[in-house]
Image (cartoon, rainbow, N blue to C red; front, side):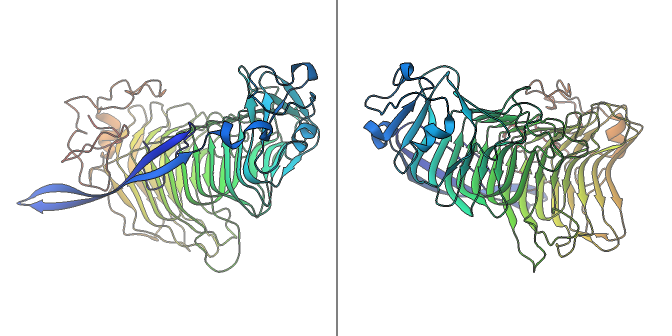
Length: 532
């Protein structure tokens, strides 16, 4: 099951699957002073997804089994009837002799291969690059290669899966997968390890080069870490994505010198879910940033309909600003709109001072847990609504911050749950701050909502209003969290008790369907991300 306005799933086992999609609309009515909720739903059932058997699609010599020595060719789990060329440890040579439409190129698990030349793939599928047998993933080791694999113009319906791509160490400037050449359709990247450990560092992970975007694609269940050794790039995932799911990946930590851990530069109808995103490689960079395409022309809504849900986003010891949704720069006409951020755990490290920065139009931030506890002497804020002097981009508008939990177990000078920061040339309009729960018992000054700038208008909510904790409650009233360890070590973290918490039933109706653990909301609702 997946939730959210944009969702994705990968079926692997052959068969026909009947998929149901349900859309729901929540409404509120008041009868004799009592607020009642009703849910109108529409369901489309029995959408059929058929997964063909790869042993049929790639039968016989359409499958090629590649080992690093001739004596092992064809042994150890190679599908029956597959081609078994003489062994080679040269990844480029092996793949160039195999890849093509209707071909499956499988490398022997447990074997190691060397990549000295980038492999440009321009095959219209179906095609697969993967592994056969059992045991450890086949390892492809490169040194400063500008793309061990380079899917390019003409690629469609290509699977790259079950490989480990490593570099030469912390000085490596190479790229694991470099996508280039316009819009690449139906690219599945599944269960890859890129970098993966100290000593196996590589320069960059998965890069969609300038002018390139993957569409109807998936990046899933992969580990991309110990990436980047130079200032300027060095990211786990970078670039343009549309109609794409990025799910279940471990991204980071990064090598010193890398920039952001993940930077989605131009995202449309994209789901980023169930990932763990760890610290970037340079102080001041972010673990996750969602930005728009760089351009200086007329307005173009070029990053929109993005769903960010159920992730752990941890700033570690480097990230001052942990998660950012904003234009790429102050001199560019960047548009970011229609983004939903929910059920994420945002965790500060020793230098973090801003949890989530939002600058766009129609951004909803709900049911998130922000833990600002770890170290550091600076003031901290969880949810930051910002307006830069960005040329051409719209003023931030209709940003909703709903049912979040803001916690700080440290002793920073000041802790803000929400902060709105405008300037003389950019207005921030229509921000809604509703049902947010805050607690920071050791912080001298606690603030539910801070506002800076005279161009902030139309704000709803604040200290002790619209279901939010008051400044005094943030400082002095324990909401009785169950096991609020600040470590995210158990699923009970920041849950409310069954009774005796001021947060229970003290919220107002808001467009929130369920809590952090997908439990339905009540009437009247609790405040914070987790129901009792």
